Image 1 (spheres, helix red, strand yellow):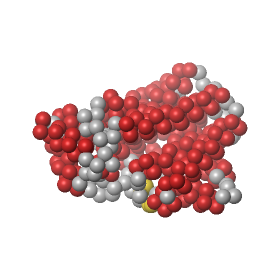
Image 2 (cartoon, rainbow, N blue to C red):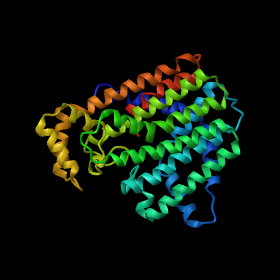
Image 3 (cartoon, rainbow, N blue to C red):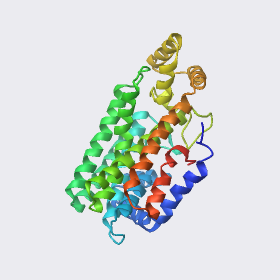
Image 4 (cartoon, rainbow, N blue to C red):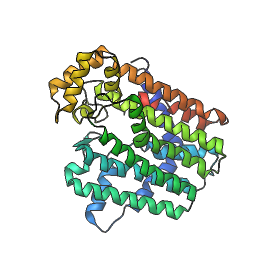
Length: 338
């Protein structure tokens, strides 16, 4: 796995440095989210509070705040708080919907909302979060940001549908996989960081730089997350190992072994992904192929490329504490321990 494990401490430190730098702002984001999710409907209040208190890192909100600060947004302003809350609401709405689609029982090590209250309630509360998000955007009144975040919501939905469309395709192309994660994950990362630049009224070069920074972090983040599905038999970050496999999701480690496998091994993969359900024996045999072809290591190498691109895109900004922290943060997607 190369540098993935030894660098955990410094990667986690970068995340904590960003969180500490923006502690007052992120506290305001939390308060605003809580205020916006007030409802006279008891179940909405209960479910939204439960979901939002389940241990999320608020990484996308921190990226919005950090990018705005790097780009020169007035630290006394409040629009960064409002739009960071907006980004978090989009993210959490998609998680509520994802858990229904994936029929997930656990997220971050605790029961999902759909496991406790059912699929119908989870979808409707996810919709409620999105509606509150759009209220914030309209109140903000910036048409560029409104267009950016609304189009991002559409991209996320397209990515989820595209993933469903290709579910169970053992011969999925790597290019198609990148397209999927670019839409379903990286799009919101890039929108978060570009929003920061828009808040600061940055020029096009700076906007493009921060957009690319977020996009490439997002790609690395998702590739690493997918690789961890085959990394260990332990539970990591509350995610059961093999979850994607049993759900029929073909991610980069599987794509890599399909690229490198012989004919018999490819046929094996095609057949097990045709099945409605995969067995523990199927998973163990697949793990043997993962190890044989070093697919996890190869996945992390792909992710490292995006980390390096993300780091370098901030080169046009002047050296400052915010730039250093954001550049150090790029390794968090690969080396995080929470």
